[in-house]
Image 1 (cartoon, rainbow, N blue to C red):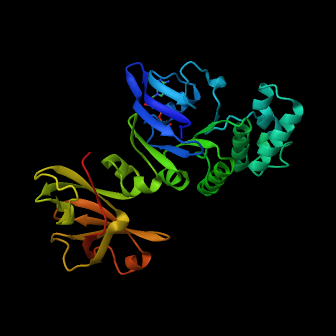
Image 2: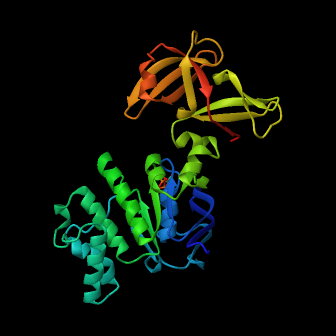
Image 3: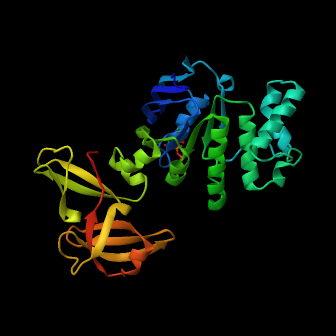
Length: 349
Ligand code: ATP
């Protein structure tokens, strides 16, 4: 099936600075794609190029197979929701949601019907007469969504729309947003720097770093098979350790052991081994100064799990293990533990 959106070798330069560097990806119709990455990595710039607010410096952007380079923002079939929402404070909820349709000079009956449907979709039926300042943060968020969905965009672009909300409301709206996306079947492209948010909502995540996409894959794949040290480090609680290939195995000093190498690299190749916190198993040990052992420096409880911060004297390394609270109870600061690695990924860059 033809993708709804294709970015082909897209680049954006601001003077001598390259904000988006040779980025290519496809988005399938009805997909929830998230751009994830640290501040300044080019996520918003990419989104603004899709919307048409920024011109592409080189490369092409195709929407439904048509090149968008000469199509101005207002003619593109995309909607956008911003972090600051940009609602009109002097207008009622109804007028805010109706705005796009009024600009299109749609008949009044049609506007009433579609605004009603949109408000119902975001659970705000009956709120049409309220002024924006009479709404809670979450309700304003829903008005902004209704306003961008009412024009039935082919793609809805969302730039950190939940960024300003407190954690509980944010989690609630994440679920609502995902449900809304599935119910309407609209293609969503969502920008965030919050990896948990990206994990919980997306069909696929594009991990951005310094203007490039490092990996684009479903959340579970990004998590279990990161393609680079950057992705392993940015997504989830990962221990990224230096290793060296020898005799078809990877010697990892911090773990005091050699791990199997599925790719049987040649001797002497420097690599990194990424071990998720939950893939480190700890068992009591006599000594922490022998290979494969560590000392507990700090214990942190976090509800469903606990974190053990460990030091490995021999390799001068720090590790974090995610363990069950019951396991944490038998440890204390200063405990000596033996390390066992359950799963890991070998990375070359
Ligand atoms: P954040 O999460 O902080 O919003 P981001 O990943 O969305 O970050 P962008 O806003 O896309 O990052 O910015 C990418 C880079 O491009 C930044 O270094 C930024 O300073 C630069 N940049 C963005 N817009 C312009 C502009 N109009 N002129 C010059 N540089 C710009």
